[in-house]
View 1 (cartoon, rainbow, N blue to C red):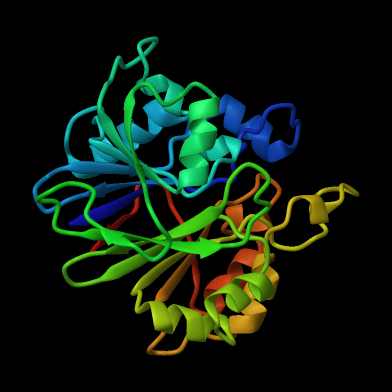
View 2: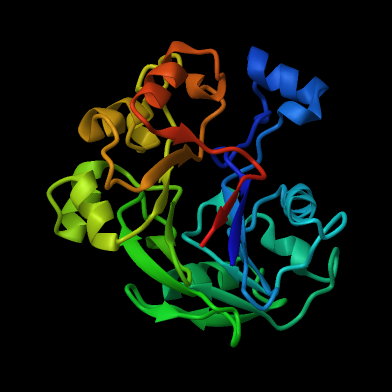
Length: 287
């Protein structure tokens, strides 16, 4: 089975609405430089397709997945799973409805609070909702050959709770963690002392980790505490250099201000020199 990463940006994507920075202007004029909100497609051993997150870039992301898999120009997922109810992770759900895809009975997996929020927004009609409990392992379809596990994390939970998703394959596992507030809260919730201890306890081989900002200095005076995410600089400071037994840590959910988007930046070089990496749209993980 495989996982295709089809979005690496923070909820607003690149270009971001209302932004005139050089990076967003360049992406407007050259679509190859666009980055879509964090999302992945999981391909089961039976060929079934399972989407994690549903962003506004759904058409482009399904196209990226199809081309990466050699399946033509687009694909249609059989299930959708959601980590939480913030806009960039759910605003593609409406495209499954009668105005666009006209889908019905697609299995939707999320926590009860996420499903309740989606129902209030009037987005539930194309889906068969499945409430998932924290720590519950389940297969999203009968013969897919892998399991999901929802792992609770703290993150600005004004609309719903938030989970990371562990994808457990036949030979490897991957952690999908686009959002959380800070490492102190996440590690306290998990009962672990360090990032390395937590990842080792999860027994994952790959970890897609919240990399929204490099530091708290990116937003030109805007209060970054109102958008809580652990900066990459802090995360790699806690981790240090990658050790042989460490999982492969890949940072994604990148804000358009984040200098690691530029592979020529000093920040990108610092991160890579420590043995960590930045997610790329269309990259595939074999589990």
